[in-house]
Length: 420
Ligand SMILES: *Cc1c(COP(=O)(O)O)cnc(C)c1O
Image (tube, rainbow, N blue to C red; front, side):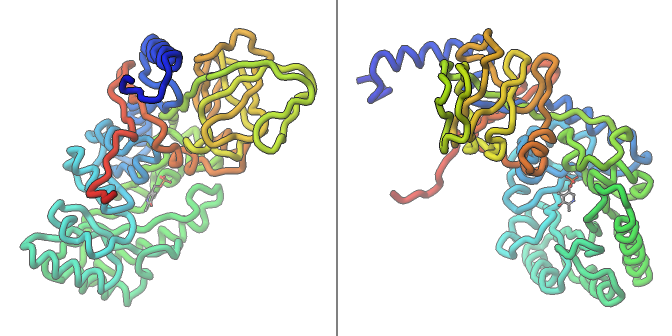
């Protein structure tokens, strides 16, 4: 028995061939993978910068592991363009630190006090909008003999986090800023509707924010790093951001925040492509049903291909019977339901299709392109969610200067202190 244990000789030989065929294509994966074009990420940063007033600071928002693209490689790629990074949790902030990021990192959501000590030590910026948060942070900072860098948060219209931008809160903010060990570096708010054509609500939020800044200034509190705009603001309202920092999320990855923003203002290139493989091809006859529930039945003889991707990889199940993939630059409709690990597509009109051919689920093949927005439209989903949900069973292949810069295989993971 070799190290493959229960595989018989034929299976092992099949496995050897698989490894060979994947080597030929220079991609070490044979089931599914996503490519992330770091040159596109840099291009998007440059295009945004060109749309903004000179000197506008940039924050790269790399939460949710860089919207599914991989936070560390994206941060490495844009490091010289940005002033700061934005993440969602203490763990994400410390992960960036672990990967050698030295520029300031701000956590964009509330943080439990159990993380304060480590975050202060690592100089991670923490959002603060209550006296309790500030007092605990202050005590922790004093006991460590270090400064805790905070960004105050104003709620100007999301009702998510932040203090109401009124006189009472201005007093609170001023008191917070005078606490020992507290360094009030930033003040931010977040737009709720900047991606809509009608900017009434966005202007109202901006007005509230500016009034709050004045209230703070009247109390002698000058905040050096003020930031409001997200991708939609960067694209549609660059003039609002002069003198502020902006937070670039979805646009950095090459997707527009919505179909209503002025795309002509900033040219963007999508960074991610999602690829899989044909694993099996067969003919089916009239009346043969395809996949769970038999939601598709052949009306005529067809040639169908099994593809090794499913909702377990984050490919949306709502594409069942509606979506399409690209094979040899041609569109192949998805037949029946998307399964957890596989799905079946129609290749009757693609006679050249063969087992181990590449299947494009997101991205370009020849003249054809499937965008994340198309998937969202077809399935009734949300484009941000689609990229964020590309799962850890999908290795990422990073492209830079026309070559592969590196890969990330999420299955190289570890369980710490696990008791079995
Ligand atoms: C996620 C997030 C962003 C980025 O938003 P995009 O629409 O992706 O640009 C900016 N600011 C805050 C506070 C966020 O939570």
